[in-house]
Image (cartoon, rainbow, N blue to C red; front, side, top):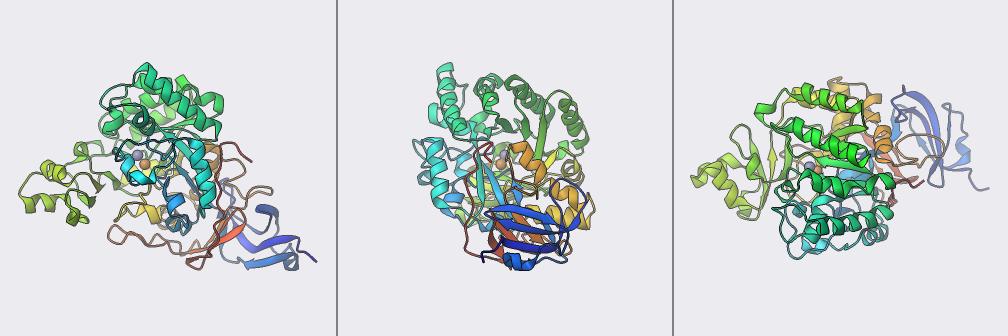
Length: 484
Ligand code: ZN
Ligand code: CU
């Protein structure tokens, strides 16, 4: 007789993603979805083809990494081990103004699009081509995508140090509209980066206009995370109000020593805006940031580690200050000689990260950089670090709240329907983990380490990760906005 269920996960401590209290339950899966949730021991094990004993373990919705730069990696490295190993079952790509699609490059990818890969990794002149490529690659995790403003600028502008003309904005809008038709979640900007900084607010206002009709959102790496952060937040809120769409502030932080302690003020501004419009933010659980090496962020106030360099490849893994001393030049001159390069900036304070991560409008996003040879440990460790270090060890918030910040709230904010919660009828993206031992093993010196304490991960009902290794099954899909 055929089985009623494909998989039964028995007697788990269920944290359903809503923030509600944990409860004991049996959860049965069929055809990629959660078919039944019942009292522990209530579902007959003989009714399922596979039975997993979950006693003592937490079953939660698969984690949603809302802030990634995995655009080309989901195609080139579809195993997606850095994410799957943490219990991540969905990634949102296209953040910080940079996306793999729609892109037509004239030469090398401009900064910071070079974080996504080399010129030949950009193969998607329109968004539909990217959707098809993800489907063909069958990555191990689901993929949803934003369209990057800097990517659109690069398609239509001969130089970045000026505002786009009305004709150029029109051309960018047409590409954005094509992407929205094929399920893009929204528009992202990276206004702090040199190649977008010359875009005035009006350029973004005009570009953002088609978002509302599509039910899409606006995500932004603010124009400043330093002294002018409040002004930068105001700009983001204004764009959201004009376009009538929700605003997501990416990796909200107080960067730079002079800015430490301002998180209270910054979060008050967020709360204030929430009275008028939907706003939220994401955050990664570390006091160091990482991106390309940027002269504007070079300082002697804190350690800056060079992770890669085209100017002096042998300097990868060394502190900028040590390199400058060895070369007998100042920090800025050393940085100039290293560029293009990547860096980790130890630019934040613990108390600010604690406050921002704890805020009720904050969801977790890794901002991991998968193409960095010495990646910031957030790439492999962000989600277990929130569950282990921040929720369990430091008791910053309960485990149920931590899970909500990486599942249910994330799905609702980004419009990923029937994901992010353990509910009957929802897709069976699930992670089974040990709340007592879950831990990020990735460190700044040894960053490519899978997390500990993840027992099993299911993507669309398929067992994809177990006992610290991939099962070889890759069951991820492209998730168009609003799809059931
Ligand atoms: Zn960013
Ligand atoms: Cu980013």
